[in-house]
Structure formats: structure tokens, C-alpha cells
Image (tube, rainbow, N blue to C red):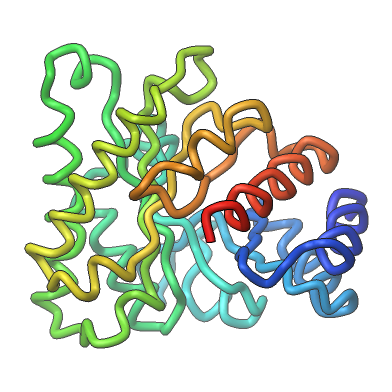
Length: 249
């Protein structure tokens, strides 16, 4: 509550409409964030951290699409690195969650990224391409209409080895991988849609490096981790992002 109370007025008062700003709280804080968003009319968006692949049934502890719609979330994360690494969610589970969210008309932030062993073995390109291919091909086979796909899917590239480790992915390298992802999207869907789909970078993003990240040719935004936990550092990142966007126009 304290975080959203600090963030919402600042966003409403000082930021342009060029940026989409979103917070992704724990399930127990979603309602509070949504209420603050609605009351402040700040334009802040709220996403959930995960979604069940099951739409109904006896799955104790799962949060399904209908529950998220009742909470009025704007989007949901699917395939976050911690879900993949800690909870062992494989490509099949990620694809199922993606399909479930889209079927419920909930926009998805689809996360992808390689662990350190894959990076060290110079297999990043194939690994990340396969993650995108697996998720979207399954959706395509489910007869999902890709006409408005750019408004329903955002991709977030988050190299696992650069999250919370102190290691950073060079902005130009992140841009290279993101361009690779965009090319893969063009293969699966089409070039026009691929150009419109926003692709974010996540991995030790902070106020000190956000401008370099945002100014890359194929990076459309950032998925911020630890630096977003405090309102002041989060707002610094938002402000610098807005400045970088304005300079690029």
C-alpha cells in the first residue's frame, strides 16, 4: 500500500503518456494496488506474477484466469525465470499457461532467457529461440487469432545469469538477443506483428543503466527486479526512461 501510494501521484503528476508503467505485486497485494490505481486515476497498470494453467477444477492453491479477471489485473507474467528455475516449469507448462491467459483475454508478459551454463556453451540463440517457438507455436495450434497479437503479448528477455548475481548483460548484447527474438516472432507470426510486439529487457536493471538499455534499437522497455522494490529507485528508473524516450522521438 505504501509503495503504490507513493508511486501513483508521482506518475500522474509528472509523466507523459508515452510510457506504460506497470507494477507486479504478490497475489495478496493485487487488490490493494488495483484500488490505488483506480482511486488515483494515475494510469498505473497492475499485473499478476503467475497464472494457473488450469481454468477450473480441484487444484488447491492455484490462481486461475477467472480469479485474476475478478481482480481486474491488466496482465500476467508467464514463464518468469524463477518459475522456470525454482519451480521447474518446462516449456509445456509455460505454453499451457500462455494459452489459458490468452483464452481469457488477459494480456501476457512472456519471459524467456538462458541460464549461465547455456551462455557459457554459446547456445543462447538456439535456447531462447526454442523457448519462443515452443510457447507461440502451441498457441498457434490452438487456433488463436494473431490479428491483435501485439496488444496481447509482450516478451521479456531476462538472462538468468544476470539476475541478482551482480553480473550484467551488456546493453548491445541484450539488444542483439532481443533482435533475434523479434526475428523469431516474424517467422512464427509475421513481420508486421513482430515489429509491433514490445520486447523488454530484464536483468540487473537500475537507474544507472536504464538509459543505455532504453536507447538500444530493439529494446522497448525494461522488466525491473530488485530496483523496483523501493518507490524512490523505481521512480528514478521511470523518470529516466521517460527522458530517454523523449530524446529518441
